[in-house]
Length: 305
Image 1 (cartoon, rainbow, N blue to C red):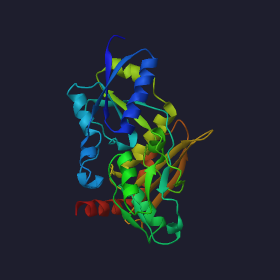
Image 2 (spheres, rainbow, N blue to C red; image 1 turned 60 degrees about the vertical axis):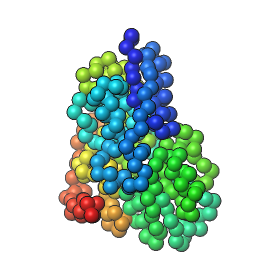
Image 3 (tube, rainbow, N blue to C red; image 1 turned 45 degrees about the vertical axis):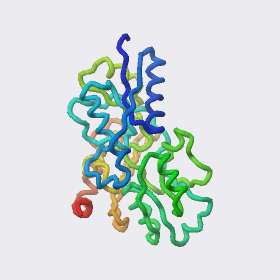
């Protein structure tokens, strides 16, 4: 185990927490490691909504380039930020056991706005669409930046609240006392999961990382991301998906919304453990064949404006 595994990560507090988590797991197995932090374009361009930045993988591209250039050996990502198609030469090497999948609303101590008018902040089209579907009288404003930045912006503005992934706040102990679980909101595909990628031809790192893989999380996120890929959402369309293991099967819920939340396509199905391979794809095709295709076309046109 003489090779030192160079771990690439974004330099936000949450990204570093994730990288240190992987580093500790590798160190505990006897591997030598070092961490290299880089700033991603998604962190730098804070004034443009995510969907206007044009490419999926805005948060992963910088690390992809560092890997392809040989500056780092592996990279750690929030799996929901990773495009469904990885760059040629880079492969998924481990999916860690999933944390909390829920979205939460962080508020300011008064929830009266839920029964009247309110302003909610989120940079996610998925969260925006689901919020407007449930609260059509509310206004949704854009919110960008890492979780620390977004928390500060919520504090500095007169918004009613903001939507966050519970997992991100829990990992760095930022979850405040004023929050409610949004158990009615379908999370992003792979929300709460961390993925580690390696170079396809790097057998040393791939063998090391295989020891960290959590197969249940790998299967669930595979289904969710296949659903996303088939709907052709990239990071940008209002698409939610969640697969969960029960005793004898895998339950799945997938949703596609219009940007304003008024149109909703949903699917709830189950599959057996040995038939999950094309399950996400089949669920997505069912939505596409029942009005989803036309909706995806109109979303693409709206986002190009």
